[in-house]
Image (cartoon, rainbow, N blue to C red; front, side, top):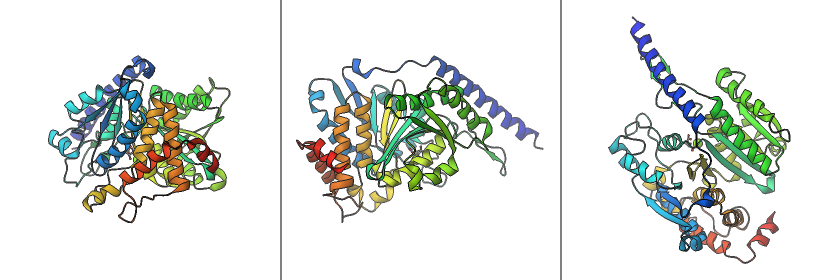
Length: 397
Ligand code: IPM
Ligand code: MG
């Protein structure tokens, strides 16, 4: 007894090792960064997703088209709607991302994606892989960049979450050896760690930020998190102007709540799962996950999304139109900044700050006692058009 099980698990593990070695080789060969300045047009794909996704994605698209109307006219950008990234279609095809949808996504340079439902055991849906995770892996979107800012409290954080490996890389490939014994895997590669940490260091350097903090649990998860830290400290030798330190995820989670300490953190870089958890916590200071956008960046493609889920309950209760679109609109600002339209990105960020944190002429509550997502985006667009937008924003700082 047992030997069969051991053999089977061993074969499974061998296969995983083989695939991961191939991934390392692919990373070594990876192409260089795409240059958006040379593209005409930059193709922006819009994916509605599930639940409240199509509602909030629509508001974000309206604002993007509003801000890029001249560029669209001049043929510098093109918008494409991509249908089919819905749980119904994914379940029917039995795939995290159906092939034809993937093909269309790959024809775009960047995408703006509404949240998608991630099935789990016991759901009415087949237990297929999360569309987010699959997209991140298939397009090699290795950096999940999540800003959180609360200026009046001195909070100005930029999170660099590794997005293609760590505890997520083999999410649906764990082994149930027997009824009693189950394994999942965590993978960290030197290449994977280096590219995300380098991006964080470069960001800090470019923006004149002196300090970068790595977050791991390397005292316990010694092999993989140890590799992450070791890679980071070695890379830090190339950046003498930066002060690089590291914290463990548990105390880091605590320190974000400490008003005296939290403002000292600026740029943080960490493996996948820690970044998932820490960025939800961080977003809470800014007004909740509904207010935070997320950029998934790779060398060839980039995808921009909300950091939260598809909130099917809101749809069921008929409240989808009251859903807060700000996370998707923040994602649109990240898209603008990433693709070379920083001036428009900044205008949008200022409008989001004015409307959401200071002026608050309209408030979203997720219910009929608040405004609708559409009304809120009209409010944002009116604010963007103010001749004294910059002055107004400054007056609140
Ligand atoms: C996020 C989300 C996803 C993740 C889910 C939907 C798979 O929580 O983008 O943070 O865990 O990465
Ligand atoms: Mg998350």
